[in-house]
Image (cartoon, rainbow, N blue to C red; front, side, top):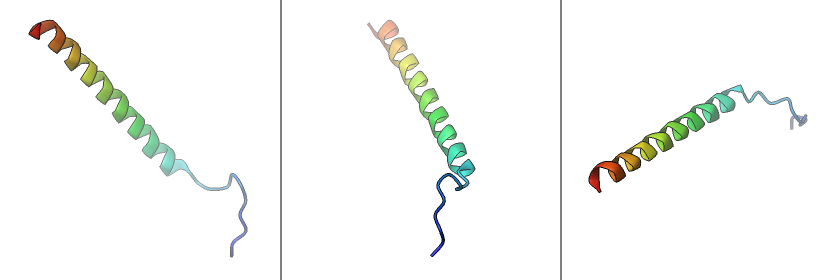
Amino acid sequence: MAEHKAGEMNVESQEKTFDGFMSWVTWSVIVILVLLVGMAIFIS
């Protein structure tokens, strides 16, 4: 079995995936908030 050494794993791919996910979540929340504000203004 291979010897485990903390901090040596290549996490570049995981970091890119997480950054993309966080970007998607951020933009989704912004779009939802804009839609809700627009609905509150124009429907009421």
